[in-house]
Length: 460
Image (tube, rainbow, N blue to C red):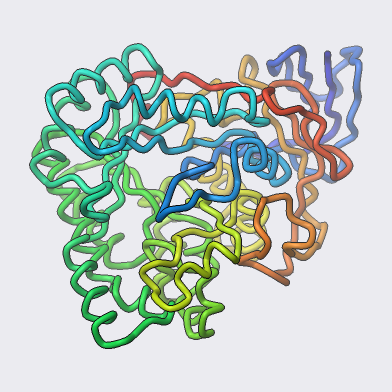
């Protein structure tokens, strides 16, 4: 199948210009003015923008957590992502402590194969590092095309590794061209504050926030940068929320460290005042929690200063009935909220439309940087001849309202209910096939492919 997109405003991380884009099979074949190709399908994109397909580097699909599972699986989650212009996601495999990485990989392959509608890859979460696991890490990088390894500085007894294990993992990953990513919060401090609040009878969602003050994230982020400096390993901090953590990274630049940072759309859009709404605040219980207005300002500035490279979602939805597991104990509320579908539109509306970031910065943090950092560029993340034809045709003027009544995520509430947004996805192509058009998904489960990633990060 061939597709010719006419007269759109092509936007990449570096350029903005009006052109036609010709797609054949799975690739972009030509870009130029008044292209004369004969195509099976012609799309008029006059007045619209053409972005590279979005890459969400942080999602949790069908993930076990606190005795339940996140409510979006690979089918519903990647389909919802496509509706919002995200053509690829990177999910997290979780190693069970005491078990192998390969057993965890097999589990996640069963979750995804034949179900994914959009493209995907994996980060490997290492929760129990030892000599045998070290050998598996090398195999994942060199044979499986999985080159990023998630670590947790919190969730003791389930996911957390200690600093000694962290350093040893960094040394192995550094030697073989991978990347260590981190959930950077001080788990010991958080656990003590949670226990203290529960002992005082403080059970509301507000105390989830008050048990994870900014210092818990700032301290852990600084400690992570120090370990990276010691091992000379590339690092990536996921879901950064606050000014204190950002300043830890800012200080690391004084010793010429290059540390990649991700924030999430909710930390740019929402704040901790939502936790004051009694149990309704459970909708926004996530870790780290939402922060203050001053932190939002710091994060937007960090994007413009190049300290923050990507905007993800940490998409980990639960039905309202699942959230009620913590009705009488905030520590039992499943952590996470639905966002995979609205990341691109919210970032455009709040960022570009309101003048906080440029169009090119929007593409950089929603697609291009993730492709570079995680070893997929220029196959993914840009509009260039030879790149995968993952394209989003976007109407920058169209206004709409977000609601659980109309979203496609498998979640019975929205964290952005009633939010008015300017800019809407019109058509989405995934590897040269029309994925979304006329508010319908035209791809079947199983179309999504696992994308093997390169062994070295592209430093940006």
